[in-house]
Length: 115
Length: 111
Image 1 (cartoon, chains in turn purple, blue):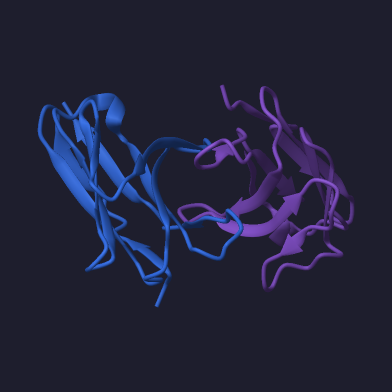
Image 2 (image 1 turned 90 degrees about the vertical axis):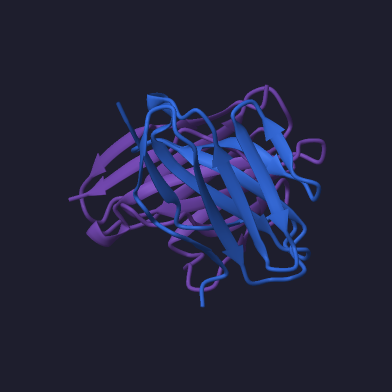
């Protein structure tokens, strides 16, 4: 149980384009989803917390107009990186939890490369 | 000071040996603690939760020391497949479920 999927797994795009990443909880309803970013050999950095049906809460230093998060249902959250730049290249990982699950379960991640 | 700190390693461990490492946290009000395993270029996978009384899952033993504000992970009879980066995660009491992660400890099990 507690399977989280993420799509796409890898994206290569040109600078200035927008990229949408989907995160789905497959076998449970996720009241809360989290979006992280991880640079090579660095720790996971929480970008934002997303609760179904409400606005996401962004961590300090994360631009909400650049990283648009939508949590439209209990099984789907999306992260859109708008006007991507090379410095946005990173490994983006979502995680999900519900009230009945202890801990967070991660999606397989999306590797974004902006040229 | 980082809120969650780990020795990055690498810990080079002969197959069959025991390895242990710690993770310190700064928020004394933290409630929940976890160990995750992350393989290269993959997502973290929950290894085990850490309970106040300490807990064991097969070859893995986790301990919590609230007085000194650290958690530990011990791996017995190391297997080659245990080679990975081990991330500790801490949930502060007022975090609405958010976790704070350490940067990870790399373990390399050698034949």
